[in-house]
Picture 1 (cartoon, rainbow, N blue to C red):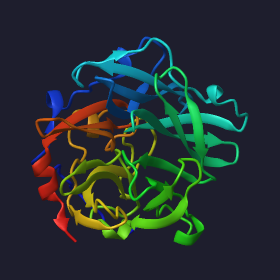
Picture 2 (cartoon, rainbow, N blue to C red):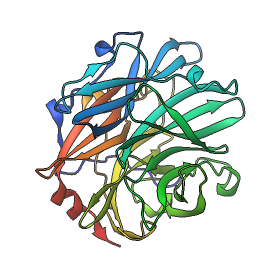
Picture 3 (tube, helix red, strand yellow):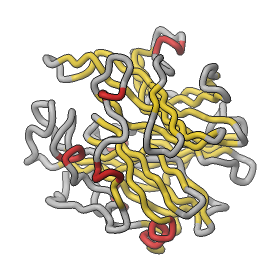
Length: 334
């Protein structure tokens, strides 16, 4: 699988909230839960809103979860969360017998509406969906990809008259029949039909990845460009039991880059070091799959603070903060 990375460290500009302790976990849930992670987070109608993934009903024999759904939580400060008593979205809510599981929500506000990207497992492949809501009670499905595609995130405004999304397709045959997945970009005039697809960032572009990369949190607009998080994966065959599974050899980190404001297919800045690497107890020692950081939400505050929400070890949701100028400075010109 190529070069190994024995040690990776988070950037010094990052501060983990509450020493890296979770902001949300199964102990906060009013319903059955095992793993709370990979959340999308926004500020909408004067509140912070988090849509999170809940995997539960663990099957020890198969080392997976029998059930999965998306829950919802609200916050006044982005730190303390109140979880809604009922699930927000389940596979059954989509009224499609093909769909077996729904997970990994991402939230973006565009023109006063909230858009939800999500992934579904179906009987014939993995698909990515886009839905819209204004009240988090009723939801309309706008688009579903063909298999195999997921990890989709939307830019928070149209660019040159088109909606833009980042995505991670699964081109197994064209990449040698193994994990070798990259970050792509597609465009749409109506949020329903997508095309003009092009490669944005490849695995080989990232010095600390040797397996796959993909979108993280939806980008935020800055004067310097679209500040964009992505996730990276490296495999080390010497890793054995890391978490609940008998063998887990992957490590996930978060990276950061800047895209051009007018042409987001152009990378104008990129950090060649991880922004967040697994280091704390929750990220590297405890959980379902340890050594995993997966960024799903990023909020720019008025004072220049950036809140970054990420799943840790596929088990809990955590938060880190940094100053906008420091994050931009990490993205060296390419």
